[in-house]
Length: 355
Image (cartoon, rainbow, N blue to C red):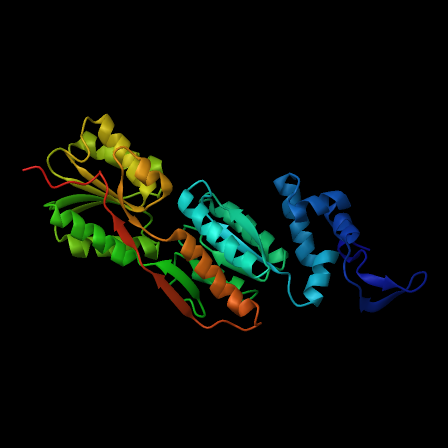
């Protein structure tokens, strides 16, 4: 008998086994994976570190044998695990921390627990988390990965449980629950603000162009600014904002040409501020800088950052409330979109263009 078939059948005397399969046990999984039952438990609970190769082998066997932990089996018999997942890219970014708080509060209000998966913008790490989520039979998931989402991947997941997208959307995805800030309106507010201050040539630091939220911000800005825009693509991290501005300074592209910088998020704006300061440029005397998100540190920057406030907490809460509205009813959700308003917070990093 192979490991895979171990424990798969109910025994009825020596040399005999019935044709009726019994549920796989944790010992079956351990035997098939060549590990101890304790190791299987650690992999499934996530409460102890396990070698990634071993953990992957255990998860593969769990999927192959269809193993369901006893506590989870009882929940499934009741029709619900009362747990949802939340996928975010960077818990250290206070925007996503606020979004997660909103999601957790909404889940808590309805008696649900929440599994937080922090991907660090790592596609492989995201894949591992999604594999774990699938094997844990969660009731639904809030997806806020911060990376360009795959429609095919999300459709496959939606075949297992409902999904709500937080602050992002995917072209052609049917039955999508979406809660997002009005990114295009935010970009428009920035463009109108800088134009009113007399700026006519700006540097725009974007995130990955595959993200629809980033494209909407850029489109709104360009249409409202109605001036010359130099675009450079980054990755939403502070280091990329610093690098892109430092490179342009070195090339001479910011001395007397661009009088304003619009960064796709506050972290990139912080990097830009540092690079400008190191280059001996005054903000806002020589050049104005605007961010997007209004994370908590924005008002504490030097100078305080003019930025677009998007309601991260409300986005997380709304996405989760939408999701659980259908989870608790046991219904397949139709397509639904909630667009939340944004606001420009004018602080000390923007000023009229020097004549």
